[in-house]
Length: 379
Ligand code: ADP
Ligand code: MG
Figure 1 (tube, protein in one colour):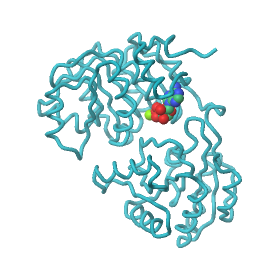
Figure 2 (cartoon, protein in one colour):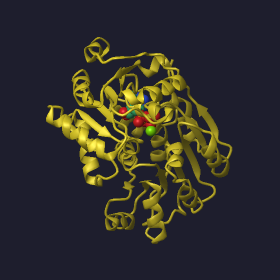
Figure 3 (cartoon, rainbow, N blue to C red):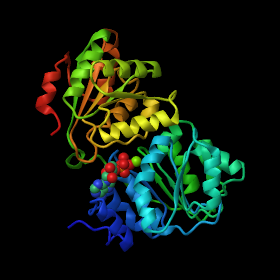
Figure 4 (spheres, rainbow, N blue to C red):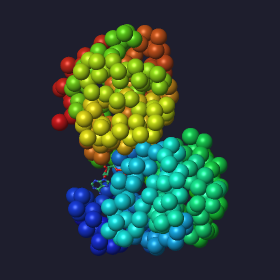
């Protein structure tokens, strides 16, 4: 018997809001954490990408925080990227609405005046990237001393991206007795410092990859001359409904997107030199299926969640094992199957073999055969 959201202590109206989106049974990380989080305990959770961490913290957040005074949010989600902020907002907003709470996102590259205005009107739940929020706090537009619940989402990425000093300064301005929920792909190193310093007797939940839940991911490694890569990528995308294509540089991302478009694959680039508007438009076009391939750099892709990515293409091989895992985690999420293709130029063979050894991926680097993907392609 699986538990229901009801049994985990989720209020009726929130259970109703979930049911409206067809969500009726908690995923394992949710079943493991929601009851304790609802009871007010601190918790730190580690679980694979796509396992449902967002709802695991969104439900307690929507259920537990009160109505805010102007400029004084009651709940706070800190996360590393704008894209992730938008995605968390999409999951949290319907729940907050059911609970009568107002949500707003705060991140750089958007109008400061609009943020100030929203805070003056009152924001119960703030979803924020550390830099912009610190800016608003510094200007006196936001005050964190009424915060009851803080969520640190993708804490390991915030650490990787150098945000921890800012995160700590922000946490230091919240009340000591706040509840702190932390989610991260790893709980060691810098993240462990956060846990020890900012959590009180946290419940720890570490969920390993569950092969049954995970969906099957197939990894392919193909020899490819640099000049063949665009045509191969086009053929790969033709076998999957959607693709994320990774390049090493921003310049390459733009170029590859352009070349794919020219070859009839609707594509958009997403990287740090594009404006906030361009990034959001690209992401929305990809989510809606209008664009089949999103061409991204590693930094731009951090924290992005798009469902049902049929294939991940490493147009340029990942620089590190961590990047390989993170890039490839865009496919095979939430129980769907996935495909991962790495294009290996002659001068990259040694690097890729090193990557394979480190990751215990035993697939040979073989001749490119996009036709083979059809046999294993996702339903
Ligand atoms: P992550 O653990 O990587 O943060 P997400 O929270 O983004 O994963 O969830 C992955 C996907 O699974 C989302 O599209 C989300 O709406 C969906 N999801 C989460 N919980 C459930 C559930 N209990 N039932 C069905 N779908 C769910
Ligand atoms: Mg997440």
